Length: 148
Image: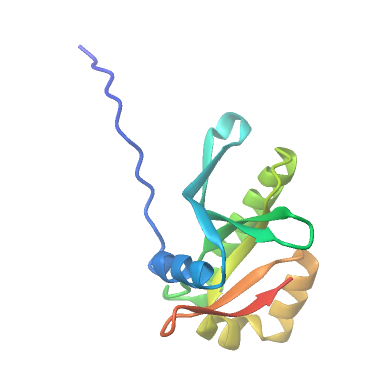
């Protein structure tokens, strides 16, 4: 007899998830969701690593972001880049189609920025894909650069 069991879904966090969370909070952001979830047609639930908000005094409104954290610690930086860009594309399209008022960012460590994203082809990719990046320092848990 088949027994239908409901098993809670637990999504694995990126190795540097907590560092990026701390960096965002230190930068004045309120992390509202870890594992920000939205429904993407037949694929069901899609999870982005986190969502955050920041009060903008000038407009008395809130700026909302979704952040996909990547560590770039795999065997191949290019393979890590393929995965990161693929996820970014899917999440970006999904957020836009659902008209969610969040701006998507890809969080990358400083070593990935210096060794990979600063290369000419990566700069072209950033421009072509209109990538928004948060560059974070692993040692200090600080945001060192926003690329918009």
